[in-house]
Image (cartoon, rainbow over all chains, first blue to last red):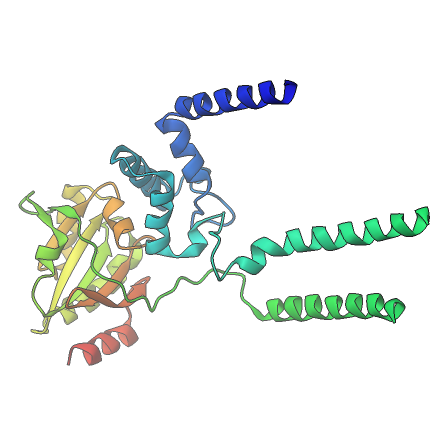
Length: 121
Length: 172
């Protein structure tokens, strides 16, 4: 019963949180995930270059046009390629990138598990 | 058998890591944008510099001629350098030079054109820099060679004698 209540609370809280996330929050989130291509190691959000400032205006316009976060990322990806996103999408070029940490974690876990098993024997 | 397998797999793992890092050493860590892109002319409404009219970009690049889209600004020093090349290229009948005036004031832009000449067939006024983003541009100056609604070649940075020859060979 307790677990059920916990799930219920999580289910109620999450949608409300999402509703509260207005355009400004979304804009900050998107610009933080876009790389400023002419700066070194800065996101569009952090940068004050001409390029980044224009990007911020475009992101604003796209949000007002009603595009979703994903559609905005796709839009920029089509213009500038994968490099513009800090969070690369999950496709055939990036399977290795995404799955390698998981794989290493599993292998590590297996080794530790094995050690414990040997000890208990 | 099992005792040998673990050191062997660790050894192989390090070999793979070594090869990846060793190859990575040869890569440049400066991002060079994909200059040989071939994508279509974006369809967006733009404001024209002279008439203040709002038109679609596809109308500007409608004929099957070659177009050179040049992003420029009066405050941009390299634009000054490449201007003579644009003046030279605009003499060619097969090529129309279209400008995007990037984050500029009309007064300064007009003075710039008065001083150095106007190579542009028409100019798109882009005071927010958002139009340049539609083209996938990074800044000024940048030029795109366009034919039948496709971008054939992208020049990042000022045009030089070499790129002028290349453009001429394209439009022959």
